[in-house]
Amino acid sequence: MKIGVIAIQGNVAEHAHALKRALAERGDHGEIILIKHDGLVLDCDAIVLPGGESTTLARLIWKEGIATEIKDAVKSGVPVLGTCAGLVLLAKHGDEEIAQTKQRLLDIMDIEVKRNAFGRQYDSFETSIDISGIGDGFPAIFIRAPAITRCGDGVSALAWIDDYVVAAQQGSALALAFHPEMVHDTRVHQYFIDMI
Ligand code: GLN
Image 1 (cartoon, rainbow, N blue to C red):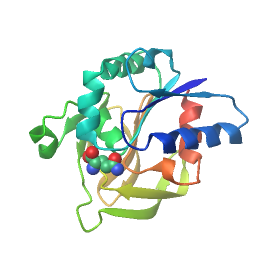
Image 2 (cartoon, rainbow, N blue to C red):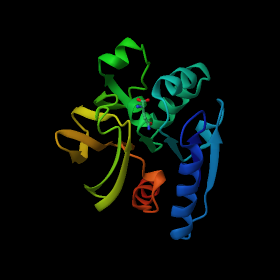
Image 3 (cartoon, helix red, strand yellow):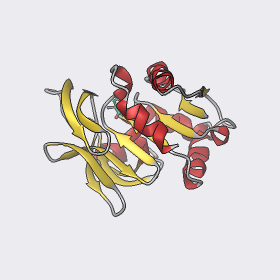
Image 4 (cartoon, protein in one colour):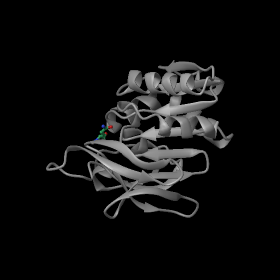
């Protein structure tokens, strides 16, 4: 099993470690491929888009030809996990801020996202959330997190904070507004590996 982590910017090492821990816990062998350029995505059985800065990530994945490869991989059924900025990239529709910064999204999930949805006062926070299908009481860390403001047909909302959806799945694409790679709890990564 080869799991590719888009390694342009952001929480790359954290995802690689979390995936390795999750694989070890289940006694599975897997290889983590750090994807810094084109030509690697199509060799992977799953793809992770880490959090970071979505404007930078969007610009570079399109420039490097990685974006088109991710879209092709997902079309052929390869699971993709996007966390935080990675969630923004997976979306079809962005908010005004995303439009103004002319971010080109991947249009993989029929969701509308709002960047930095939790505002300054709650810039970063940790809270326990229940994630449908994954488990209750997950320690979710939000860092200048986006939120999903609308889910289209075929998208299942898996977790909420107030009116915001903070976890959603559409087919083989899983999007989370928080950072499961920063906690010891491996349930999210286990769920993602199960999708492969
Ligand atoms: N606010 C960031 C963005 O929209 C995402 C923050 C993160 O990934 N931790 O790019």
